[in-house]
Length: 118
Image 1 (cartoon, rainbow, N blue to C red):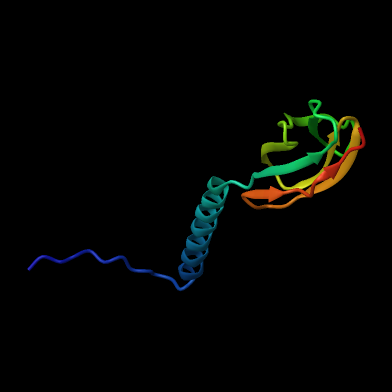
Image 2 (cartoon, rainbow, N blue to C red):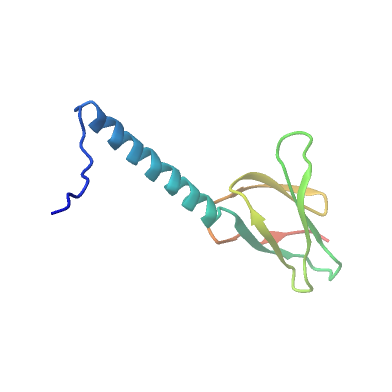
């Protein structure tokens, strides 16, 4: 009869290390899975303006140097779309007018309409 090798733990001190190692592996795997899901949000909104001129929408950092992050041009109906924005606080700049916004973690975030005086 052949014997089947069996792993034996010679010390009880090894048990907690095996448990911690397992927890660490699960934590790393979960963080990798979480990172692969993505956390970017697509922004949609509408500009209400009486004239049918082209309206540029810029998403900027609220902190200096207030660099533009993304730009979009509203369509004839005033609708705009800005994809893949990480959650956080931003300034939405429409024709030079700044509107502070907060981007939440979701697939699509609808922003309230912005009324511009022409």
